[in-house]
Length: 495
Ligand code: FAD
Image 1 (spheres, rainbow, N blue to C red):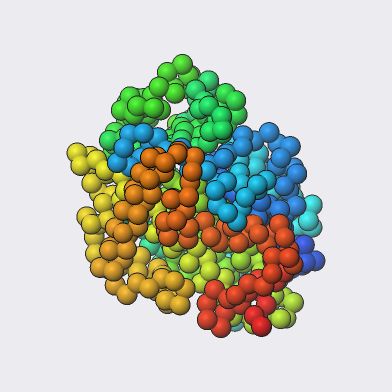
Image 2: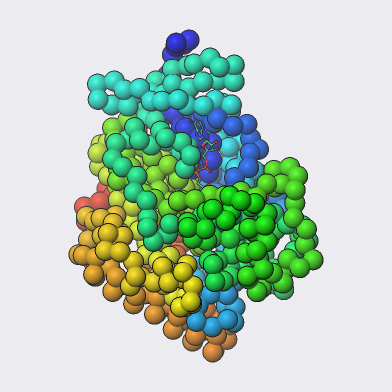
C-alpha cells in the first residue's frame, strides 16, 4: 500500500552507467531527478573494458574526467587480437582514428564497482536525489501515459513517485522494460554464453600494449583477458549456448578446460592464481545476452542502456551504448522540459539515433566474427554469416528498418548477408595489409567502412565534448531531423 506520493520531473530506475549519465545531464539543467537503485554501491558488474568516447566524450560532459584520471585505472590504448586468418596477434590502437588524436586517444579498463560509484556519486553532486537499496517494482499510468513508479525501500515499505518521465536504466535483469510495449528480440547469431572469473598475477603484454584488452579466438569460442590493475585480471570465455551443461557441472573445471584449449591466454595465466574471495571470488555465467527491444519509448517512459538493447561484448561497446543512450535521452528530456521540441520529435530522434548506433555495432561485430576462420569448430562455423538463418538476417533488417536515409541501404536479408560478407573480407584484407606494412600503422583498418562507421559517432560525441561551440554545426543524421546543441545537452532544429 502506498505510504506517500512524491513528485519529480524524472525518475531514473537503476544507477548504472546509463542511469547515472542521464540523471546527471538532466539534473544539470535544474530539473528534479530521482535515481532509484536496488543495490548499495559499490556493487559488482561485468563490462570492464571501455571505449574512448565514454571517457573523453560523455565523462567530460559529466565532469568526471579528472576523478577518473586519479582513480588509477589502467590505460587502454586499444585491443590486441589473436583473431582472423593468421595466428599472429594484431593490435587495434585508438590513436589512429584521426578525430580522436592525441590526449584523448585512450580509454580505461575499470573495476565497475569503482567506476559506477564515481558516476553515481557524481549524479548526486549534480543535484540528483539518489536512493540506494530501493527496488522499483512497477510503473503506473495515468491517461495512457506512464506517470510514475512504485518502489520498495530497505525496510520493505512501498512508495509511489509521480514523474513526467520514467527512465528505465535497470540493465538486463529487470523486467520493467516490458512496460514500454513491444517485444525483446534475442539474436540467434550472437546467442552465446560467457563464463568468467578473476586471476592474480597473470602476465602483462609489453608497452604500449600493457593496458590493452587481449582477445583470443580458440576452437570453442573466444577469450577476453583484461588487466584491471598491475596484478588483477578479468578473464572470460564466450562459448556456445549448447555448452551450458558443461559449465553448470563445475564452473571451475569448465573454465580450466577452456583455458587449456587456448594458447596465449593459457600462457599468460601459467603463473597466476584464481581469486576465490570477495567480489571477484565467484566464477560467473551470463547467457543469451544479445537482444534489442522493438520499442525504446512510449509517452512517459524511455529505455536506455541494457534495458533497451545489448550486442555481444567483443568490442567493448556495452558501456558506450549505455552512456551514449543516456546522453541522447537526456537531450530529449531537456528539450521537452524546456519546451523547445515536442515530445514525439524529441524521442523519435532519440530512438532513431540509438537504434542506428546499435545497428552499426551489430553489423561491425557480425563481420568481426565472420572474419575468423576455423572450419572444424562448431562455434566458428555458426559464426559464418553465410550459415546464419534468414530470420536472423531479417531481424537485422528490421532493426535498421526505416533508417534508409542514414547510410543503411539494406532492403532484404540477402542484401544484409552480402554486406556482412563484404565487410568481413574488407576486415581480413585490412589486417593482412597492416601486418605486412607495420603492425602499428592502423590506416588500412580505419579505411574499412565498417570500422570507420563504428568509431564515427563516438568520435563525434568526443569532439563536441572537447570543443563545445568550436566543434561547429552538425548536420542532421536523418532527413528533417534534429541536431545536438553546441553544449551537447539539447536538440535543436538545424538551420
Ligand atoms: P547496469 O550496469 O546493469 O546497471 C543497471 C542498474 O540497475 C544496476 O545497478 C541494478 O542494480 C539496477 N537495477 C536493476 N533492477 C532494478 C530495479 N528494479 N530497481 C532499481 N534498480 C534496479 N561492456 C563494455 O563496455 N565493456 C566490456 O568489456 C563488456 N564486457 C561484457 C561482458 C559480458 C559477458 C557481458 C554480458 C556484458 C559486457 N559488457 C561490456 C556490457 C555491460 O556489462 C553493459 O552494457 C553495461 O553494464 C550496461 O549498463 P547499464 O547502466 O545499462 O546497466
